[in-house]
Length: 112
Length: 90
Length: 407
Ligand SMILES: Cc1cc2nc3c(=O)[nH]c(=O)nc-3n(C[C@H](O)[C@H](O)[C@H](O)COP(=O)(O)OP(=O)(O)OC[C@H]3O[C@@H](n4cnc5c(N)ncnc54)[C@H](O)[C@@H]3O)c2cc1C
Ligand code: FES
Figure 1 (cartoon, each protein chain N blue to C red):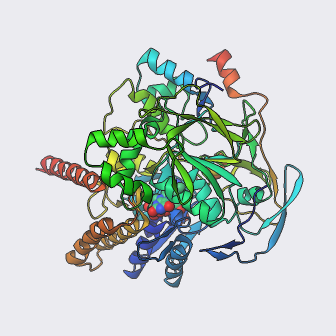
Figure 2 (cartoon, each protein chain N blue to C red; figure 1 turned 45 degrees about the vertical axis):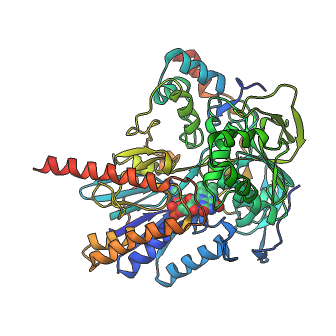
Figure 3 (cartoon, rainbow over the protein chains, first blue to last red; figure 1 turned 135 degrees about the vertical axis):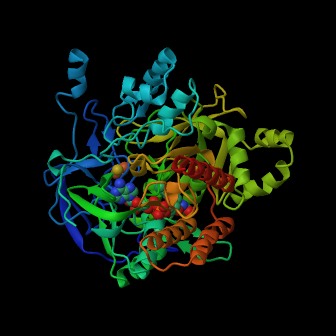
């Protein structure tokens, strides 16, 4: 479990924000309105955001600023959404991707 | 997990062993190394692993300071096909 | 069509936007992040005078000034391509395309990794990721972390974690392999740290001033360096231990460390496992110049600036008409330098748009970049001045080449 830093010696007290409810892989979670999906999930103790499309290895945030795309999830039906820079909203339906059944690489091995 | 199995390109899951072997076999530059192994050709466009792939290639080749080792190609962020070809609106 | 589009709302982009707006230009700022401020947002350190450099506050000030000028800042939009067509620039962003006469690229820097077996496990993140989670989103990256890679950024962020009451079990080197290079070599790392005296962990500097005198002493320094590290803010900085593996099945559970020789070779039988729930990878920063690279702008690799940088003049013009650069895209430095570069770029742009900008105010802005640089509290490369000089020489060579073509 990770924690929110409510009182920071230099940055001060975390101002209260509106709480939103969203789902991730079918489970209900709460977050602070407007914080990135990845932050809301980490605060709830969730590190694994998706599984690699081919090997199925678990992945979480890596760069946290939009560069690496490791945090990509499906949000309200849109794929490839970066959880580290997409604000969480009330009622969002988020799914972490899993291993895909027919990776391009298998096709390539046999055909190219 | 051994070093050889260590992943270098996180998107395409290209391993250290694969890259070192390919670089050794073909004494190739980064670009060729990328094309041969797919390292740096995944979702992130090589933003994460390019320095690592460069390092392996540079062990066998000289750096040309005027040539970006792994060329960038548009789009530098993945785009949904439906969004391409939008018309200027401003 | 706009007068100016700025890509990036970090310290460089925002300062440029403010300056250009003050000179009457019609501007659009685009950034893919959810807040304005770029990497300034996460910064937090105490300056020598005892003042805190609080990135959130500084970003708020810049954004506040921008909004009082009525600036149009669009967040959450990624630019994926730019093209120059018929004397104007097209900026392709997500599902929209914008047209502008001038384009300023202020896209900042990206982090380079070191690679360690196990580094794809959830819980392993770049050191900047931990900084942003802690200072910007106010969520602890974990309870107890290990930082792999000893450099200016990782020591600064280790302290920030400590302030936020996140335990850092150790800062250690990455293991030696073909990709980790100098970052895995204890002697090289020690040298690099001793050279960036302002930010280097203070106990090292004290030790270092004695060691810097000759090579023999320097080698002795790393040989005598305590195996369990020197404590900095109570965090062990280990220059004689390397992380050889990150442990865990579904997420990080710990790391395996081993003692290494002065050259970074693992001493067999010294492996030990320490527990942690997150790991930070710190391989340094490089200029994020991908959009400039799509334009045909010439590039040069300059180590002291952090990698490949687009060719540009002291007043932030590139050789391409209407294309300008400012901030870490031009080399890795602190936020204050980025701001002064942003201001300079904006003055050059305003001048090129026919605004009444005196040559003296432009050259004064250029001078201010240098003075900001020499006063900087944080420096990522000790030879950054030399790097800037190299770039200036390339610029002059290029300009001379162009003149020859013209006659
Ligand atoms: C992870 C990290 C941590 C850092 N920590 C410190 C620190 O602690 N202290 C310090 O002094 N310096 C630090 N730096 C250095 C930092 O780059 C400078 O201090 C300063 O922020 C540079 O300002 P800038 O305006 O050039 O770029 P940035 O502040 O990086 O801003 C660039 C902006 O451009 C946006 N952008 C980039 N590409 C696109 C695109 N294609 N489409 C849309 N938007 C885009 C980004 O989202 C970002 O907001 C750090 C850098 C990084 C990468
Ligand atoms: S964690 Fe890298 S893009 Fe989100």
